[in-house]
Image 1 (cartoon, rainbow, N blue to C red):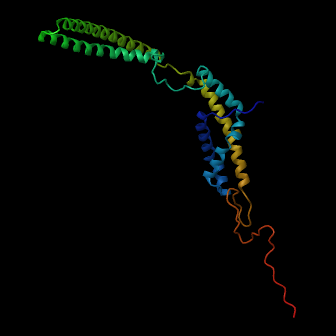
Image 2: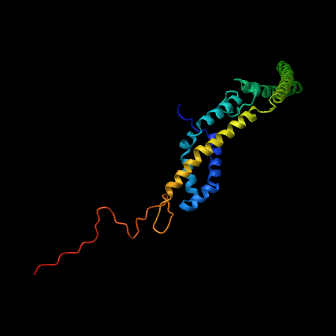
Image 3: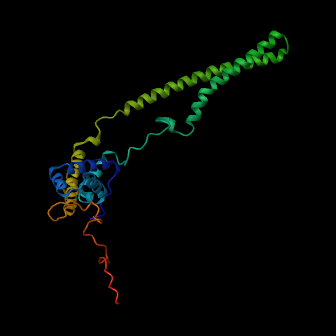
Length: 249
C-alpha cells in the first residue's frame, strides 16, 4: 500500500465536524469525566493527529477524492475568476482597443469643434482667408471622423453585450455532477470510516492513557502538569537534609 493521502484543505472542515461528533458521543463524554481531561485539550490532540487518524480511512478518501476530481472535469480547483472578465476581454490588447474606441470619438469631436471655431472666427474677422478655409475643412473632416467612430463604437458595444448575454445563458449551471449520488455516498463512506476506524480509536487510546489510578481516587490526567510541588516529591540526587556530626571535645 502506498503512502497515505494528505488531507486536502477543503476537507478539514469535515474532519473537524467528525471529531466534534465523536467527542460529543456519550462514550467519550463518560471517559472524559472519569479521566478529568479537558474537552478542549482532547480536541486539540485530535486535530494535531490528523495524519494518523486519516490514514485509517485512506482507501475511502482516495475513492472520494477521485470521484470528486472526475466530477470537476479533472480540475483540482475551480480557481479564481479572471480580473479582465470573460470572453474576448482576456486577449492581449483588448483593453487598448476598448480605450481607443471610447477616446477616438471624443478627441475627434473636440478637434472638430476647435478647428471650426477658429476657421469661422477667422472668416468673420476677414483675415487669413486661406487658413480659415483650411481650418473649416479640417473641422468638418474631424466631425465626420467623430461621427463614424462613435457609430463603430456603438456597434462594437452592442455586439459585446450580445456575446456576453449568450455566454451567460450557456453558463447557466444545470444539475451539478458534484452533487451526484455516487459522490455523496463516497463522502459518507469516508466520513464513517474516518469516525469508526480513525478518530474514535485514537480518542479512546488517548483517554485510556490519561486515566492514572491514584490512592483513594480513580481519576487523573496525563494532560495535567506533574505535581512537582507535592509533599512526597523528592528531586533526583537529593537524599534529605543531613545532620552535622557533634564536635569532639
